[in-house]
Length: 300
Image (cartoon, rainbow, N blue to C red):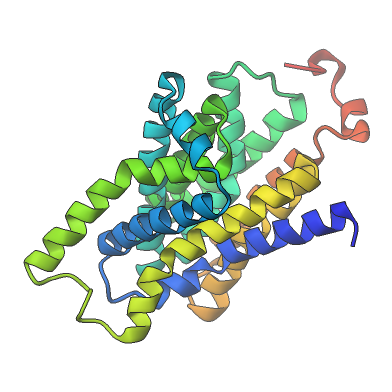
């Protein structure tokens, strides 16, 4: 198997795993979302620390830890990814799987906007059109249901800002996750200790299977990240850009067909605009699209 094919399989494994996460969190539905989050943070920290030890990368970890230039970025990343994880777990266990998938569909487009506003990146005409199409899709679903899809926006915004923080710090993904969980792990430990102390914690009260799922939260968090890191070494960002939509697509299918969440005509129209936006965004830099760009706006 050649290098590129191996990379594609790594990417598919990573994004498919992320797409199937609703199945995992639903199995822990009777446990409060905040407690699941605390376990996810704690066991991610433990699992990633073990990986770094086995890979003999503790020296790199310590070197980055004591770099003042990256501390603020890592601190921000730790709290942003924690907020993202909590929102997703809460959404899944409160029957908002479809809305959660919407959030990860619009995330790349929000990242584009952040790149333009914060990093002063320049967008092509068709990229701006794709953002406008996605905005129309969100407006349709907002008007139809009379409320802003806050779950989708929370997931998209926290992950977009998380991506921005990681771009600015430029730290290896596994070391970055170790640092992020190191920052928030003490809070998770304090929270879990408090729950156990007052008798409301899950440990010792749930089934053996649920205990294993709580402990395994670190594995299901870190393994896809390892696979993604291997994919990024082998294939282009363009290829990864196409494969990334596998994750919200799996989530959408689970929400519709397994969890029977409402998927109305308004949803279909809204998602159609967003899918069109993503398709346009994905091909916006191809030779054909550049050639048909209006002459007065070859580049904005």
